[in-house]
Image (tube, rainbow, N blue to C red; front, side, top):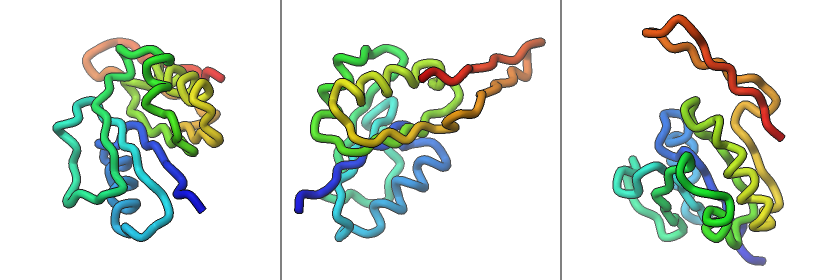
Length: 130
């Protein structure tokens, strides 16, 4: 049986990095990991495992067609991007669809996102885009 390939977007965030470390703690698990972070050289990991691939990608600057080629062969996408990238999460979703990814888990699925700017007199609400 071939290994399942799981892609994690936002792998360097506080919670997301914990997900990555937990996944890497068991190298005999039957899946490969693909970590997407803003800058490839800054991945926060304690040790490297052979079933980990890392891409440094700025989701705010890439299009779905380019990103879909990086998702070729991926079975599951878990998008756990931070609030600044949420307006661009549809790019990840579109790329996953183009790459025939079977499962897509989106951060805060079905919940509106409210970003409060401390120094400003307004908040930004990111609506869910399906």
